[in-house]
Length: 189
Image (spheres, rainbow, N blue to C red):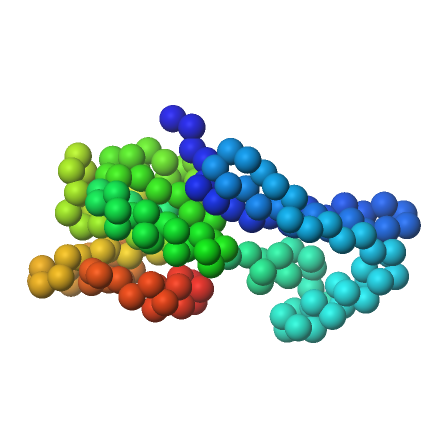
């Protein structure tokens, strides 16, 4: 199984003795496009780096800290309703998240090690393997103990999830999802 993000953004930084080159790229499906290229002399780049450190409150820390502060979450959307999944994926893409998608819990379990998402939006009721059972399998792996799994539950479907809240499911999200609130929720992770 080949797994490619639906959309992703990246920044490549190359330093020579005299300049720093910053390439902003966007990947859509299998095509990568250069959005912008900035070439700075070393002194200007150093000043920019210091400004970024101050802006993100990470003065005196490494460039990796700034990269982490700028990075959007990697999100796996697991939803069997293709139209609803497409709506969520499109919205997250417009907000620059790295988005992956699949239609059932079994595929999510198979994909998890390859993409290592920060957040999983998992529909509760799906064919093949439902969202709750898939979440339990994912959380058995110590590598994914910190992955935030949001269980999407249909309107009016009240079930007692108290025994798995916190350990398996990070939060319940009732459908239909308020996409703006979802964005804020994911950004807070």
